[in-house]
Length: 169
Image (tube, rainbow, N blue to C red):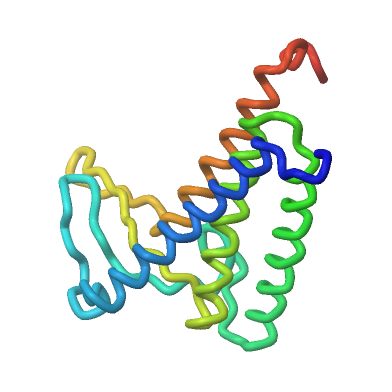
């Protein structure tokens, strides 16, 4: 990089910062200004509601734990993952992969801040659909989760669009 940060790395860092700020701003606004916790379920549209959920586990509520030791273990795992992703991002050669890694890092840090501040991750987006009189719900999630999923999609796209990727085992 010749002493100067590459434009690709800058884009990844910018993606991480934007994801982190959007995530934390939305959570702070929903918790302290909108006071989502006092409102219960807020119907936004026919398939989208706001609802406050505290996730003490990892993705999709797996490994739920209320113990302090469990929370610190999850936090330590998250810190190690962010460090590994940051090293990968610094070595990345494509804009798509670098931005994808930045989104994952920003989302992971956003959820880690929640775990430190509240002992759980703040989730609030509930997608659902009614088919034949039966209601189907998706997991409750937040903007950090959206950034992480978008980042993973960017990494997959970057991998698959490389010449010869479809032929690789």
